[in-house]
Length: 356
Image (cartoon, rainbow, N blue to C red; front, side):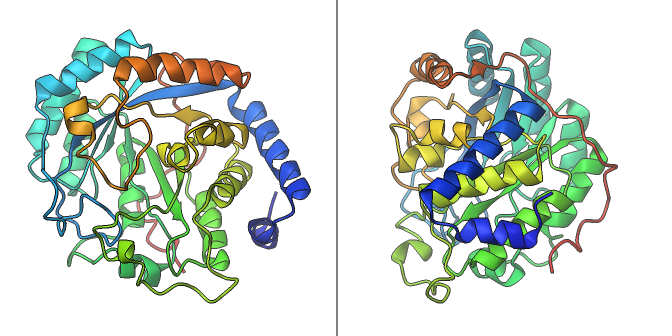
Protein backbone atom coordinates (compact mmCIF):
# COMPACT_ATOMS: atom_id res chain seq x y z
CA UNK A 1 0.00 0.00 0.00
CA UNK A 2 1.40 3.36 -1.01
CA UNK A 3 2.18 5.62 1.98
CA UNK A 4 2.36 9.38 2.37
CA UNK A 5 6.03 9.59 1.45
CA UNK A 6 5.38 7.54 -1.67
CA UNK A 7 2.43 9.72 -2.65
CA UNK A 8 4.49 12.88 -2.18
CA UNK A 9 7.39 11.49 -4.20
CA UNK A 10 5.09 10.64 -7.11
CA UNK A 11 3.41 14.05 -6.96
CA UNK A 12 6.82 15.72 -7.34
CA UNK A 13 8.02 13.27 -10.02
CA UNK A 14 8.67 14.73 -13.47
CA UNK A 15 10.61 11.97 -15.25
CA UNK A 16 8.40 10.68 -18.12
CA UNK A 17 9.72 7.13 -17.98
CA UNK A 18 9.02 6.84 -14.26
CA UNK A 19 5.61 8.42 -14.64
CA UNK A 20 4.73 5.93 -17.36
CA UNK A 21 5.30 3.18 -14.76
CA UNK A 22 2.85 4.91 -12.41
CA UNK A 23 0.23 5.18 -15.15
CA UNK A 24 0.62 1.53 -16.18
CA UNK A 25 0.26 0.46 -12.56
CA UNK A 26 -2.86 2.58 -12.06
CA UNK A 27 -4.39 1.17 -15.23
CA UNK A 28 -3.64 -2.39 -14.09
CA UNK A 29 -5.23 -1.74 -10.69
CA UNK A 30 -8.26 -0.23 -12.42
CA UNK A 31 -8.60 -3.30 -14.64
CA UNK A 32 -8.29 -5.67 -11.67
CA UNK A 33 -10.78 -3.91 -9.39
CA UNK A 34 -13.42 -2.28 -11.64
CA UNK A 35 -12.90 -3.94 -15.01
CA UNK A 36 -12.91 -2.51 -18.52
CA UNK A 37 -16.35 -0.91 -18.50
CA UNK A 38 -16.53 2.88 -18.64
CA UNK A 39 -19.72 4.00 -16.93
CA UNK A 40 -21.72 6.65 -18.80
CA UNK A 41 -23.52 9.11 -16.54
CA UNK A 42 -25.65 11.69 -18.29
CA UNK A 43 -25.18 15.16 -16.81
CA UNK A 44 -28.03 17.68 -16.56
CA UNK A 45 -27.06 21.15 -15.33
CA UNK A 46 -30.43 21.94 -13.81
CA UNK A 47 -29.78 25.49 -12.59
CA UNK A 48 -27.02 28.10 -12.56
CA UNK A 49 -28.46 30.01 -9.62
CA UNK A 50 -26.18 29.85 -6.56
CA UNK A 51 -26.06 31.49 -3.13
CA UNK A 52 -22.34 30.77 -2.67
CA UNK A 53 -19.50 33.20 -3.40
CA UNK A 54 -16.75 30.76 -4.32
CA UNK A 55 -13.74 32.76 -5.52
CA UNK A 56 -13.13 30.85 -8.77
CA UNK A 57 -16.59 29.87 -10.03
CA UNK A 58 -18.38 31.59 -12.89
CA UNK A 59 -21.86 30.97 -11.49
CA UNK A 60 -21.07 32.37 -8.03
CA UNK A 61 -23.63 34.76 -6.55
CA UNK A 62 -21.18 37.62 -7.04
CA UNK A 63 -21.26 37.31 -10.85
CA UNK A 64 -23.88 39.76 -12.06
CA UNK A 65 -22.88 39.34 -15.68
CA UNK A 66 -24.60 36.05 -16.47
CA UNK A 67 -28.17 35.15 -17.34
CA UNK A 68 -29.64 32.83 -14.74
CA UNK A 69 -31.91 29.86 -15.48
CA UNK A 70 -33.66 27.01 -13.69
CA UNK A 71 -35.02 24.00 -15.60
CA UNK A 72 -38.55 22.72 -15.17
CA UNK A 73 -39.38 19.18 -14.16
CA UNK A 74 -40.62 18.38 -17.67
CA UNK A 75 -37.36 19.65 -19.18
CA UNK A 76 -35.41 17.43 -16.78
CA UNK A 77 -37.63 14.46 -17.63
CA UNK A 78 -36.98 15.01 -21.33
CA UNK A 79 -33.25 14.73 -20.59
CA UNK A 80 -33.88 11.53 -18.61
CA UNK A 81 -35.73 10.00 -21.55
CA UNK A 82 -32.83 10.95 -23.78
CA UNK A 83 -30.40 9.27 -21.37
CA UNK A 84 -32.35 6.02 -21.72
CA UNK A 85 -32.34 6.31 -25.52
CA UNK A 86 -28.57 6.82 -25.50
CA UNK A 87 -27.98 3.82 -23.21
CA UNK A 88 -26.82 5.67 -20.10
CA UNK A 89 -27.42 4.06 -16.70
CA UNK A 90 -27.36 7.17 -14.50
CA UNK A 91 -28.71 10.71 -14.59
CA UNK A 92 -26.72 13.34 -12.68
CA UNK A 93 -28.65 16.45 -11.63
CA UNK A 94 -26.12 19.21 -10.98
CA UNK A 95 -26.71 22.84 -10.00
CA UNK A 96 -25.36 25.68 -7.98
CA UNK A 97 -26.58 25.81 -4.39
CA UNK A 98 -29.99 27.01 -5.49
CA UNK A 99 -32.80 27.16 -2.94
CA UNK A 100 -35.21 27.85 -5.77
CA UNK A 101 -34.78 24.11 -6.31
CA UNK A 102 -36.92 23.38 -3.29
CA UNK A 103 -37.06 20.19 -1.30
CA UNK A 104 -40.45 19.39 -2.82
CA UNK A 105 -39.41 20.25 -6.38
CA UNK A 106 -36.31 18.04 -6.33
CA UNK A 107 -38.23 15.21 -4.64
CA UNK A 108 -40.82 15.39 -7.39
CA UNK A 109 -38.14 15.34 -10.11
CA UNK A 110 -36.43 12.31 -8.55
CA UNK A 111 -39.68 10.37 -8.20
CA UNK A 112 -40.68 11.14 -11.77
CA UNK A 113 -37.29 10.05 -13.16
CA UNK A 114 -37.35 6.80 -11.20
CA UNK A 115 -40.97 6.08 -12.11
CA UNK A 116 -40.60 6.77 -15.82
CA UNK A 117 -37.04 5.61 -16.58
CA UNK A 118 -35.65 3.54 -13.71
CA UNK A 119 -32.31 5.35 -14.05
CA UNK A 120 -29.99 5.71 -11.09
CA UNK A 121 -30.17 9.33 -9.91
CA UNK A 122 -27.18 11.26 -8.66
CA UNK A 123 -27.60 14.69 -7.08
CA UNK A 124 -24.94 17.39 -6.92
CA UNK A 125 -26.77 20.36 -5.38
CA UNK A 126 -24.38 21.70 -2.76
CA UNK A 127 -24.50 21.87 1.02
CA UNK A 128 -28.23 21.43 1.51
CA UNK A 129 -29.98 21.10 4.91
CA UNK A 130 -30.34 17.66 6.41
CA UNK A 131 -34.10 17.60 5.89
CA UNK A 132 -33.54 18.06 2.14
CA UNK A 133 -31.01 15.24 2.01
CA UNK A 134 -33.36 12.92 3.92
CA UNK A 135 -36.31 13.76 1.67
CA UNK A 136 -34.38 13.25 -1.55
CA UNK A 137 -33.04 9.90 -0.40
CA UNK A 138 -36.59 8.84 0.50
CA UNK A 139 -37.72 10.00 -2.96
CA UNK A 140 -35.27 7.55 -4.53
CA UNK A 141 -32.01 9.45 -5.12
CA UNK A 142 -29.14 6.96 -5.23
CA UNK A 143 -26.00 9.11 -5.00
CA UNK A 144 -24.84 12.52 -3.86
CA UNK A 145 -21.71 14.34 -5.02
CA UNK A 146 -20.08 17.00 -2.85
CA UNK A 147 -16.41 17.82 -3.47
CA UNK A 148 -14.37 18.86 -0.45
CA UNK A 149 -11.94 20.42 -2.99
CA UNK A 150 -9.03 20.67 -0.53
CA UNK A 151 -8.45 19.25 2.94
CA UNK A 152 -6.39 22.33 3.83
CA UNK A 153 -8.88 24.19 6.03
CA UNK A 154 -7.19 27.60 5.64
CA UNK A 155 -7.02 27.29 1.86
CA UNK A 156 -10.63 26.15 1.66
CA UNK A 157 -11.77 29.12 3.73
CA UNK A 158 -9.82 31.50 1.49
CA UNK A 159 -11.59 30.38 -1.68
CA UNK A 160 -15.00 29.57 -0.14
CA UNK A 161 -16.38 32.38 2.03
CA UNK A 162 -18.07 30.65 4.94
CA UNK A 163 -21.81 30.74 5.65
CA UNK A 164 -22.29 30.90 9.45
CA UNK A 165 -23.94 27.94 11.09
CA UNK A 166 -23.20 25.44 8.31
CA UNK A 167 -21.68 22.05 9.14
CA UNK A 168 -18.41 21.47 7.31
CA UNK A 169 -18.35 19.38 4.17
CA UNK A 170 -16.80 16.37 5.87
CA UNK A 171 -19.67 16.22 8.37
CA UNK A 172 -22.15 16.36 5.46
CA UNK A 173 -20.28 13.58 3.63
CA UNK A 174 -20.53 11.40 6.73
CA UNK A 175 -24.23 12.13 7.05
CA UNK A 176 -24.87 11.27 3.39
CA UNK A 177 -23.30 7.86 3.92
CA UNK A 178 -25.45 7.21 7.01
CA UNK A 179 -28.55 8.10 4.98
CA UNK A 180 -27.64 5.38 2.49
CA UNK A 181 -26.45 7.45 -0.44
CA UNK A 182 -23.53 6.34 -2.53
CA UNK A 183 -21.21 9.25 -1.77
CA UNK A 184 -18.91 11.08 -4.16
CA UNK A 185 -16.37 13.78 -3.41
CA UNK A 186 -13.08 15.03 -4.79
CA UNK A 187 -10.55 17.81 -5.19
CA UNK A 188 -9.30 20.58 -7.43
CA UNK A 189 -5.70 20.36 -8.58
CA UNK A 190 -3.62 23.53 -8.77
CA UNK A 191 -5.57 25.99 -6.61
CA UNK A 192 -3.35 29.03 -5.92
CA UNK A 193 -1.73 28.37 -2.56
CA UNK A 194 -2.10 24.57 -2.80
CA UNK A 195 1.16 22.77 -1.98
CA UNK A 196 2.34 19.27 -2.81
CA UNK A 197 2.13 18.43 0.91
CA UNK A 198 -1.49 19.59 1.00
CA UNK A 199 -2.37 17.56 -2.09
CA UNK A 200 -0.74 14.47 -0.58
CA UNK A 201 -2.99 14.94 2.45
CA UNK A 202 -6.01 15.06 0.14
CA UNK A 203 -5.11 11.66 -1.23
CA UNK A 204 -4.82 10.27 2.28
CA UNK A 205 -8.30 11.66 3.00
CA UNK A 206 -9.56 9.67 0.00
CA UNK A 207 -8.23 6.57 1.72
CA UNK A 208 -9.91 7.50 5.03
CA UNK A 209 -13.30 8.24 3.47
CA UNK A 210 -15.07 5.26 1.95
CA UNK A 211 -16.18 7.12 -1.17
CA UNK A 212 -18.00 5.47 -4.05
CA UNK A 213 -16.90 8.15 -6.52
CA UNK A 214 -13.85 10.43 -6.47
CA UNK A 215 -13.57 13.36 -8.86
CA UNK A 216 -10.21 14.95 -9.65
CA UNK A 217 -10.25 18.04 -11.83
CA UNK A 218 -7.79 20.78 -12.76
CA UNK A 219 -8.32 24.22 -11.30
CA UNK A 220 -9.65 26.46 -14.08
CA UNK A 221 -10.84 29.84 -12.77
CA UNK A 222 -13.50 31.93 -14.43
CA UNK A 223 -12.12 35.34 -15.47
CA UNK A 224 -15.02 37.18 -13.77
CA UNK A 225 -13.91 36.02 -10.31
CA UNK A 226 -11.32 37.06 -7.70
CA UNK A 227 -9.12 34.06 -8.55
CA UNK A 228 -9.56 34.68 -12.24
CA UNK A 229 -7.83 38.04 -11.83
CA UNK A 230 -4.55 36.24 -11.14
CA UNK A 231 -3.89 38.26 -8.01
CA UNK A 232 -4.45 35.46 -5.48
CA UNK A 233 -1.23 34.51 -3.60
CA UNK A 234 0.46 31.28 -4.67
CA UNK A 235 2.62 28.85 -2.71
CA UNK A 236 6.41 29.34 -2.58
CA UNK A 237 8.39 28.49 -5.70
CA UNK A 238 8.63 24.76 -6.19
CA UNK A 239 5.76 24.07 -3.79
CA UNK A 240 2.79 25.40 -5.80
CA UNK A 241 0.79 22.55 -7.37
CA UNK A 242 0.43 22.94 -11.13
CA UNK A 243 -3.04 23.13 -12.67
CA UNK A 244 -2.09 21.19 -15.80
CA UNK A 245 -3.11 17.96 -17.44
CA UNK A 246 -0.03 15.99 -16.36
CA UNK A 247 -0.48 16.85 -12.69
CA UNK A 248 -4.21 16.16 -12.79
CA UNK A 249 -3.84 12.73 -14.39
CA UNK A 250 -1.01 11.98 -11.96
CA UNK A 251 -3.52 12.58 -9.15
CA UNK A 252 -6.09 10.41 -10.96
CA UNK A 253 -3.53 7.58 -11.07
CA UNK A 254 -2.63 7.96 -7.40
CA UNK A 255 -6.32 8.08 -6.49
CA UNK A 256 -6.75 4.72 -8.19
CA UNK A 257 -3.90 3.32 -6.09
CA UNK A 258 -5.25 4.59 -2.77
CA UNK A 259 -8.91 3.67 -3.54
CA UNK A 260 -8.70 0.76 -6.00
CA UNK A 261 -12.43 0.06 -6.25
CA UNK A 262 -13.76 3.64 -6.44
CA UNK A 263 -15.48 5.03 -9.51
CA UNK A 264 -13.22 7.79 -10.85
CA UNK A 265 -14.38 10.05 -13.69
CA UNK A 266 -12.24 11.39 -16.47
CA UNK A 267 -13.61 14.90 -16.23
CA UNK A 268 -14.86 17.37 -18.79
CA UNK A 269 -12.21 19.74 -17.44
CA UNK A 270 -9.51 17.34 -18.67
CA UNK A 271 -11.12 17.41 -22.10
CA UNK A 272 -11.12 21.20 -21.85
CA UNK A 273 -7.35 21.25 -21.30
CA UNK A 274 -6.83 18.84 -24.20
CA UNK A 275 -9.91 18.39 -26.43
CA UNK A 276 -8.20 15.81 -28.65
CA UNK A 277 -7.05 13.33 -25.98
CA UNK A 278 -7.58 14.67 -22.44
CA UNK A 279 -10.57 12.52 -21.54
CA UNK A 280 -8.94 9.40 -23.02
CA UNK A 281 -5.70 10.09 -21.16
CA UNK A 282 -7.61 10.18 -17.89
CA UNK A 283 -9.22 6.82 -18.70
CA UNK A 284 -5.83 5.32 -19.52
CA UNK A 285 -4.42 6.51 -16.19
CA UNK A 286 -6.98 5.01 -13.83
CA UNK A 287 -10.40 6.54 -14.52
CA UNK A 288 -13.53 4.51 -15.36
CA UNK A 289 -16.40 7.03 -15.66
CA UNK A 290 -17.35 9.73 -18.17
CA UNK A 291 -20.23 12.19 -17.87
CA UNK A 292 -21.66 13.19 -21.25
CA UNK A 293 -23.68 16.38 -21.14
CA UNK A 294 -27.45 16.20 -21.66
CA UNK A 295 -28.20 19.82 -20.72
CA UNK A 296 -30.32 21.49 -23.42
CA UNK A 297 -28.13 23.72 -25.63
CA UNK A 298 -30.07 26.85 -24.64
CA UNK A 299 -28.89 26.37 -21.04
CA UNK A 300 -25.55 24.66 -21.51
CA UNK A 301 -23.66 27.80 -22.45
CA UNK A 302 -25.08 29.58 -19.40
CA UNK A 303 -23.60 27.00 -17.01
CA UNK A 304 -20.13 28.47 -17.36
CA UNK A 305 -18.37 27.56 -14.14
CA UNK A 306 -15.09 27.96 -16.06
CA UNK A 307 -14.34 29.25 -19.57
CA UNK A 308 -13.92 27.17 -22.71
CA UNK A 309 -15.70 24.09 -21.38
CA UNK A 310 -15.37 21.14 -23.77
CA UNK A 311 -18.34 20.00 -25.87
CA UNK A 312 -20.49 22.98 -24.90
CA UNK A 313 -21.81 23.33 -28.45
CA UNK A 314 -22.36 19.62 -29.13
CA UNK A 315 -25.83 18.12 -29.06
CA UNK A 316 -26.59 15.30 -26.64
CA UNK A 317 -27.00 12.97 -29.64
CA UNK A 318 -23.56 13.87 -31.01
CA UNK A 319 -21.99 13.33 -27.61
CA UNK A 320 -23.87 10.05 -27.23
CA UNK A 321 -22.38 8.63 -30.41
CA UNK A 322 -18.91 10.18 -30.09
CA UNK A 323 -18.00 9.13 -26.55
CA UNK A 324 -18.73 5.38 -26.88
CA UNK A 325 -16.62 5.30 -30.04
CA UNK A 326 -13.74 7.06 -28.31
CA UNK A 327 -14.02 4.63 -25.41
CA UNK A 328 -13.80 1.65 -27.78
CA UNK A 329 -10.81 3.17 -29.55
CA UNK A 330 -8.72 2.80 -26.38
CA UNK A 331 -9.80 -0.81 -25.88
CA UNK A 332 -12.49 -0.19 -23.27
CA UNK A 333 -16.19 -1.07 -23.17
CA UNK A 334 -19.01 1.47 -22.74
CA UNK A 335 -21.02 0.51 -19.67
CA UNK A 336 -24.78 -0.03 -19.83
CA UNK A 337 -25.96 -0.16 -16.21
CA UNK A 338 -25.90 2.24 -13.25
CA UNK A 339 -22.31 1.33 -12.39
CA UNK A 340 -22.57 1.54 -8.61
CA UNK A 341 -20.06 0.48 -5.99
CA UNK A 342 -20.73 -1.40 -2.78
CA UNK A 343 -19.44 0.38 0.32
CA UNK A 344 -16.68 -1.59 2.06
CA UNK A 345 -16.75 0.23 5.42
CA UNK A 346 -19.51 0.99 7.90
CA UNK A 347 -20.49 4.65 7.43
CA UNK A 348 -19.47 7.01 10.20
CA UNK A 349 -21.91 9.76 11.19
CA UNK A 350 -19.03 12.11 12.09
CA UNK A 351 -16.19 12.70 9.66
CA UNK A 352 -15.41 16.19 10.90
CA UNK A 353 -12.01 15.14 12.25
CA UNK A 354 -10.47 14.07 8.94
CA UNK A 355 -8.90 17.48 8.33
CA UNK A 356 -5.78 18.24 10.31
